[in-house]
Length: 360
Image (cartoon, rainbow, N blue to C red; front, side, top):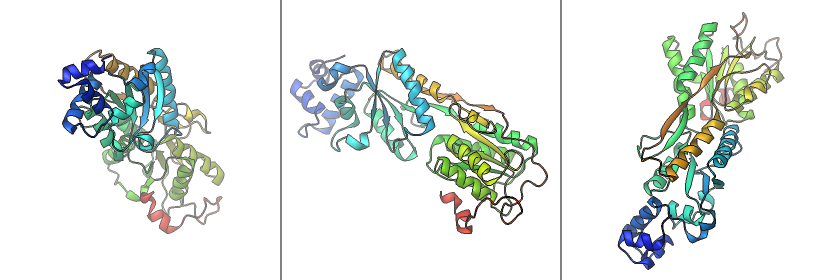
């Protein structure tokens, strides 16, 4: 760990200038401040505020906090195991809440006594990750991919397994297959949408936008998608849901409405942990080990902090399809609208909502 004196020597400026730059003094030029911060980050400098806890790393959300999601909960479990293994300590930071507008991200992290960060982001805040990397602060992004080769990331590649999942439905005899995804754009859901569309293209089935549903990734969102799909004039016989909460919400709503899974509707979900075993029937799912993803991100960040090598971390972990009991061949009579028939009604969904489903 370097000192202010060592940074000053390398930068060719006075100790006072270094101190002012690290404390965001406006009398220091932008060029000098950037140079000092780059040297401080590269040399592992920790401010006096954080010197008692130089083993701190942080899980940092660049936008809306997602801790309540099953994925992030499992990831945090993995990170917790990882920090124990690598003798680190974990903080959770929200720059959007307490970062000053006139301080850089590096200065913010230094003020918090943090050596490196694991970043969770979305399409809207990817530029924040790139800014943190540009400042030279040790960081690795979790579950998002970047064309910018300077950004370290670890994600789970789910597109191919989504294609395989939809292929499996075609092999059972399904032809009208719907897809449900989150309203928040991220690489995971885009991957899964592309995988769904790739399978339809491979089987010469036209992509119908009215069979692609977007709703918030929670139980209510899944229930809403189920109702929208099954009250169409020509409903699908199978539904692929790109988030665990969407899938569980859809299955629960199907039970409530008397829709038999898989006899009336086959459902494939996604699972970050063991959610597929928490519903009846046990859910066919594309699975990713989110806890392992958290452990791997911690290991990779520990390597960056320890300067094990100068290589960038750009890693994609594979998913796997696990077949259970929520899928079956379409039976005769499935695919009929659940509006105004002799089965238990699936509830009223307005035509306006049906046409605007893509707006979430």
